[in-house]
Image 1 (cartoon, rainbow, N blue to C red):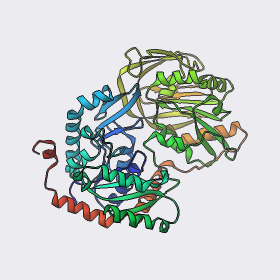
Image 2 (cartoon, rainbow, N blue to C red):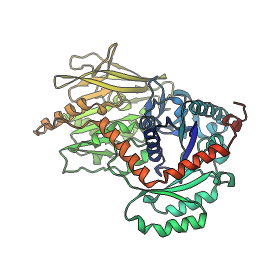
Image 3 (cartoon, rainbow, N blue to C red):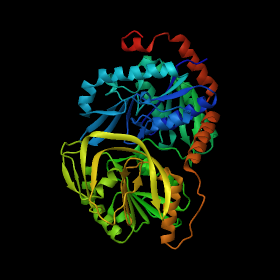
Image 4 (cartoon, helix red, strand yellow):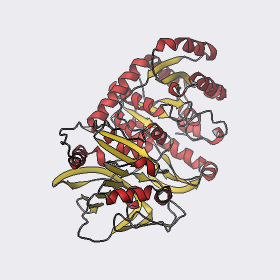
Amino acid sequence: MFKGTPLMIQGTHSDAGKSAVVTALCRIFSREGYKTAPFKSQNMALNSYITRDGKEIGRAQGVQAEAAGVVATTDMNPILIKPTGDYQSQIVVHGKPFQNMKAGTYRQEFYEQGLQVITESYLRLQKEHEIIVIEGAGSPAEVNLNDRELVNMRIARMTDAPVILVGDIEKGGVFASLVGTLQLLEEEDRKRVIGVVINKFRGDVTLLEPGLKWFEAYTGMPVLGVIPFVSGLHIEAEDSVVLDSYSKDKDDTKDLDIAVIRFPYISNFTDMDPLFTEEDCHVRYVQKAEEVGKPDLVILPGSKNTLGDLQFLHESGLGNRIQSLADQRTQIIGICGGYQMLGEEVVDEYEVESSLKVISGLHLIPMKTHLTMEKKTVLSEGMVEVEGKHLPLKGYEIHMGVTTVHEREDIIPFVVLADRTDGVQMGNIIGTYFHGLFQNDRFREELLNTLRRKKGMSPITNRSSFERKREESFDRLADVVSRHLAMDKIKEKMVEFQRLNKKKVGEAYGESV
């Protein structure tokens, strides 16, 4: 029935729920027995996923591959754009840094090369999979960018994909967004849209029905489904805009208060997701010194611009607050860029991330970091010691720095790997390059119980597996979406497009296949 058949999900704006819908469809098609792959030609994100061969792609595509039950590859996200500041981004091509570019330079000088990279990646996926679920970015109605865009209707035309347009009703104005987007599309592109989906609906759907009927009559476009808001999912978010919905204030009903420093260039914030699943923990993201309070744990997460974010800590007063809490024996954990900030100094002589070149750290660990031109991306595993217990630890490393720690008796390595050590454990201070730290169930349990004992509370044993919760979330999301989408009609349209559109992908780019 399907052979390299595409379906594309686009949205009226960022955070419309495209990634979640793609994740659900990957799970749905996989459960039906189809070998399915996600595809996002170009992704702008600071959340990374490391493939088995040590390459870097957008985290959403890695998660979507897991939902589909396939191994993630760089073909699923051949181009990753990682903003570093000053209107400049690091361009990652097939999982490796290619070049730092300003937006205008990228748009003018990289377009043809990028299109060829994308085309070749898609062709490989098409040969190996029965269904390819393609995700767009932002909105296809960005008329100022559409002549050289690489992620929305240009990709739909290249792949001969039918398109479903997703609108987010939670933000309001969903009918205006959908109608406006459709009207701004070129006629050829509008014909590719097989229907729309209204996402994140709360309440009685019968109250929405007059609007649905009006929309279909006005546009001639079918509404393929109304997806209700699904709470309590443990699936990583792609866009840092989600952080705006997280709390900044302490919740006194929870036993443990965890403050995460929200840097301007925060990356891989999904490291904290497992902590949100723990019933005794309240996790909050803070941007001001006065928001920190007296938490039980402070986490400095990853950063795409370590020197710039370290400067932010100094200027905002957050640096002084973190140092004060460290002196009070509060548990401090720095991950990747956050780890580098805990040292004496960070040097960027090659201006890999910033023009600052050198900046003083928080002086909580006697060490210095020099940023290098070479990025380390690798899956890693080793052993850690917590309260006398030796625990296995799995994670991934993604950084462009070499950290040198001064030898002292009160400093021990945090992770012991087969051929080396990583990070530092020094009293109440932990620093490590390991992302995915809290996804390790035993480590997370021991860490949280250590914090509980410190407050005179009884430990909680047999905490739930985070991976099991993720799998359950994939299935629950797929169940909800399959119930509320016209899946039979969608598959009919996919087959119809496959039959009617004989044009090959390579020919759309101007080459024979």
